[in-house]
Image (cartoon, rainbow, N blue to C red; front, top):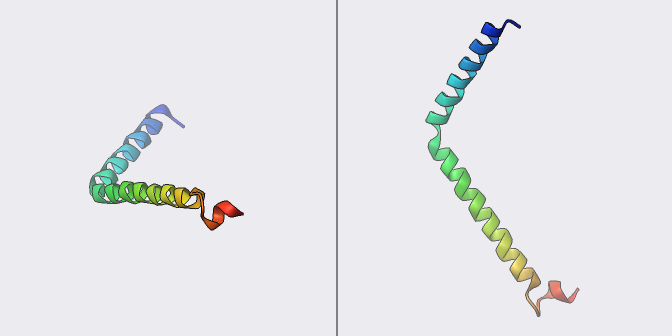
Length: 59
């Protein structure tokens, strides 16, 4: 592939990615919030499962 064509393709892809990133900033924030909430629930579940006196600890 000719270097000029290769560079033009990179510029076109960069423009597409920047346009896409500008359209959906709220979705990115929702995803981050959902991820943090999910890991918090996992942590709480693990703490409950390893708490002394629970059925999971007796097994």
